Image 1 (cartoon, rainbow, N blue to C red):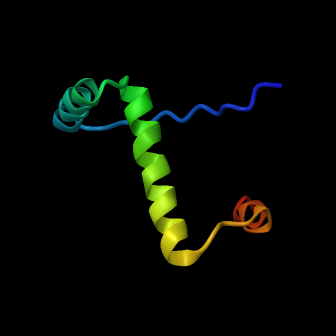
Image 2 (cartoon, rainbow, N blue to C red):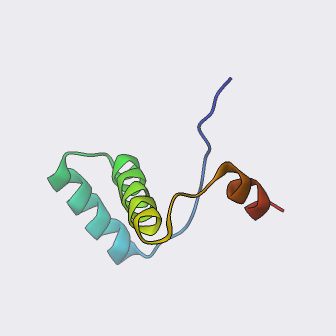
Length: 62
């Protein structure tokens, strides 16, 4: 069973170009850099607010 999900979104050209530059500088693909940034955001949120439980995740989908 494939567990990865796809998320498509639009961004301005300047943001795209700067993200491409940063990704290359960090040795990541753009997709890898975005995943890294999202994981960093989640870690910071959970550090401040506590872990997000499975129950909370399920209730957010309703």
